[in-house]
Image (cartoon, rainbow, N blue to C red; front, side):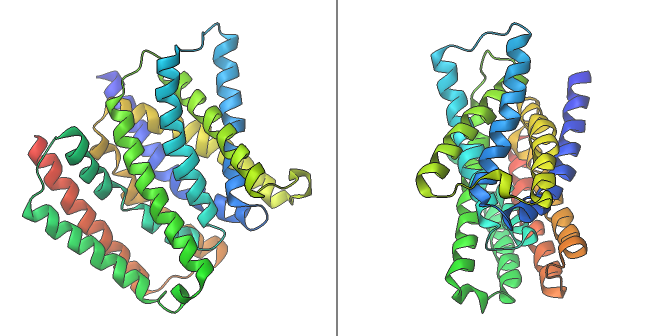
Length: 297
């Protein structure tokens, strides 16, 4: 019972803190390649956590477990978080968070496909239509910007990142490894950080951090401590104790936090279309998620 209560507290931490990381990532991506920021963030946080456990006498997992941990880290942190942070070079933090709000819907689809936990129903289909309608309402104000190849590329990156995160979440829920949860988290971050930084080196998305301004360093420090060490650890703990569809409720709260903070701190766009579209999108996602939980119950 205590672990279950702790899991709900962890879910609350994720729901709020990850909403703030969109803004911190946006600030950092204005002065440094987003993919490089993601790599530095994961590598630094991973090094801290793995070093902590190795000093305490923990041994590295067997090769089979390391393989699963690597896949989880690459799906959730290298592809999903790295791609989403990269997208912030081209789109606002609030818009990225709204796109990422489709995670629960996608987790439901992947759970039906991979875990065979429910069947696709008419109500789920209706919820998907409602959610997509909300996205259309949001993008009505962005139609003229979609002609801009950089903006369209950013949107595409955010969508692909969201798909990778949803798939990675379901994959992680299926894998119960004989490894301490937090040690697993550290290894995921370290492996993903190394892979992301190698990609940056070969793709040219690499800069000398010394030349970054103080705003970038503060943003990076916030992402390492609150986004990775605290929030990602809380996410992995929550998803190990609670159903993926329940944990995905954080995606309802993240965009609200991100849009409000983006509007207040970065003067990002905020109007009736964005507010209405966000509510419609979250409503559609809620319908799909509720139907899925109802079937499982």
